[in-house]
Length: 389
Image (tube, rainbow, N blue to C red; front, side, top):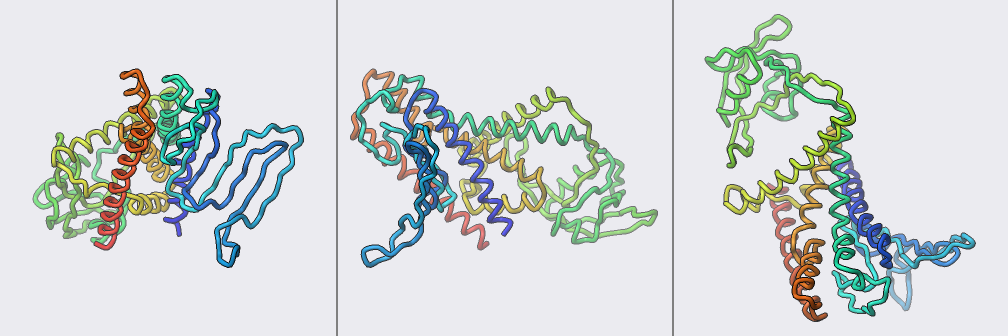
């Protein structure tokens, strides 16, 4: 249950923030927003901005014309005298896997070709206005990640490892916990090596992936011996992926408070570092150092959302910030169907100094959506395979 709710909250926040960026940017330059939807169809709750108030609808199965259809079962006009309706329909849909902002006069995934080039239509805006609207979702996701990283930095402060081989915490189901090592244990020896610092312990363990090691531990003045088989982890090292040994233990940490200005610096560096990490990951996939199979989709995101939520507030919000950066990076790529693809098309039009034909635009959108659908199916298949393995 934790996994489900964490997944819904995580995607709900990220998608709402992203689409709200498009919504506010469109409104800021006078473009009419016809629909603001969180989630994908079918619609569940809609609130339409009408003259003198709002029109609320709740949808469910309803018998009509001899069969069950998905129709409004509740309709209520919320009166607010004197209010000017914008005509925007605000939607909460059933599938929490996306969202969209439908603007007047925009050729997008809806394949809407009813464009009259009115003043309040997207296609009537200058290039800078179009780019501003299309990039606003990416900007909002980046700002969200920055705010989370900066807030966590201010809340946690700076953390420095106490360079002593003392176990602060063990990871569940990892070798150290399975061998009976507990928080507070001091590891003084590994095989034939005497250990005086945490760094010495880390270096020795990393060099022994999936290897049986002899540990000597001090606990409450008593000396204990444990035989532990390390597990493995794949980490980036010197521009390549390397397999290292892991015991599943955390060191003692010392935290120091930071000023708001230092927190801003932390937020900026962690946000930028997240983008760099994504670019490095793609480089490694392109060079063959990593595989497309390492990518994760909705199932992996749900699993990680549940795990981080159970681990506490800080891991969950850190994961949210990282995913927000990933969403921003993905959407700015020049792939038809994504924000970056739309921007690329408009930049091409500005260079050739004429708009692409309607047929060409729709074909480009269809090709882009087909590619994204194939990518999504592939990633979900890998998610399912990983789940059952």
